[in-house]
Length: 424
Ligand code: HAM
Figure 1 (cartoon, rainbow, N blue to C red):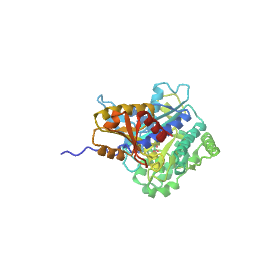
Figure 2: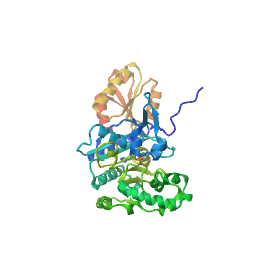
Figure 3: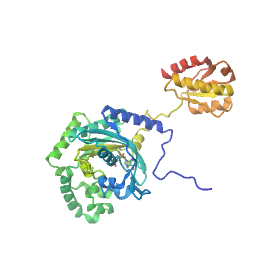
Figure 4: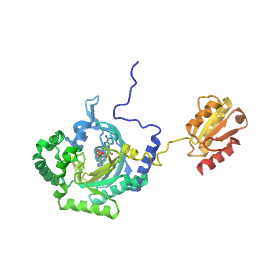
């Protein structure tokens, strides 16, 4: 016998016991997005490889080693999207959505990165992403953070998340800082770990992001990017923090926060939790004013973030939202007439009681075995149709989770009983 085929490593199934929580969370997220005027855009999962190389950056971890890239049958290099921002800009340019107008957009769906799987880190994972175009000021940066804040409030996890904030300045300011950073780390080249030594001349800012404990004291002594910001960048950042102060949103300034994608400038932020071990960043983003022109559009200010749904869901496992989907009623049918009438009754109930979760037992069996299934389903009530009930157009109604005798009622009475018991 051949082995059972299993899922690809790092690609996980979301099982029926978990999907109700996912759906409730997604509904709350979308509700808030609509509160702020964001509109949904649906984007392809596959894009031309070149798009990601040109936007995320050639010397980032994602592009260097994490992309699922393949040649299609025409020999074109395509990639499963590792993130949504690049595709969103591509789509906006392709459809003229950035022409003299602002856009507030959101998207959701799977992203793919060939990272080492561990708790909270998958090779296929789900994001909800938000992108805002055409607004240069810090007010829109603040709006995104407020939106996040509202999400956490609605989900009841505000106390589990900390907002970390930094400014990466303009490209020129970063260039100057980069020089200082290379000079600083070069004096310690022999003690740098392998990753950092490699990054020293390709992407030195990423050294600041190293998780290696042995690198931390060296990193702590490195020059801070905030000291290299020009007047305008500083003002942008200060106005943003004053908006957040006004709104009572707490944040931590983290001058080592550099993000793993190259397109950022000015504001960058991450919402982090200490409850998920090493993969504690739940939601992250920032400003990327240079990306639209880098992809051959007119220069357009842009800012956005993406939320990792698996990590968010992991924070919500004990939440009241995490209740399984169980049927309200389970219908038992024994005998040919009962089977036919049962279908009729079930459809009537579904017509008259929208929102009713009714499972009709299929596949036959004795009363006893069907009752067992009813009990196992978790349903609150059993609806029972035997030959007697069927002959008189009646139905048995029996509580399964609370005290109470089985009563025999007409179909009309049943509608009213269920309405009273379940929907009041
Ligand atoms: P990112 O920081 O690469 O940013 O990813 C955003 C979030 O996606 C992370 O904070 C994390 O919650 C989740 N995430 C990333 N990789 C994984 C993984 N392997 N497994 C599970 N969750 C993961 C972006 O993707 C940018 N496009 C965000 C953005 C939008 N910036 C501007 N606009």
